[in-house]
Image (tube, rainbow, N blue to C red; front, side, top):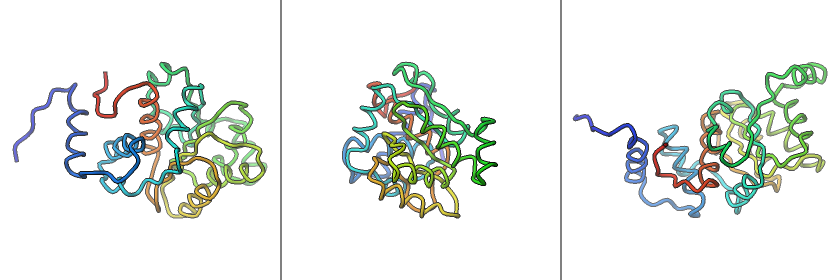
Length: 216
């Protein structure tokens, strides 16, 4: 097997070319394809071509929210660190994670919940349009669902891609039944890197960058 010589600035573009050649045509609305490809590029898992579920017009609604300055809230600092800061700044958006905040830890301990569940309450108090990205904690999705039922917090978009075995599938199904725009991964698959990849795809699209362009 021969190594392929690719200039550093062309690696991402070449990666997308390989992905497209291996998966062929994608049976999905055009606006969803950049998100799907970005996740495949991040994970090297071609099954995400079939494993990402989008509510109707989820991407369009997310882009509109981003252009209004939506706050992206993540359920891990890993996902937060993976979101492109330059893209956020260009669009006048912010990204936050409350998982390490003392008040969240205190609320969780007092109420006997996880920090991820308690962090949803803090996000609900932001008073701003929110895109909530969960790549780790199904309890974050459960907390979101309970707020949605009470109409106390309605995110502009929920990115529901927690990974694992306990309540993961069930929590994703709750979000898909919630009536709120969503991008959700089927089954047990997901993770913080997937959550960050979806956020970045949306930010790049909102900023007018084509999904196959190399990073500058």
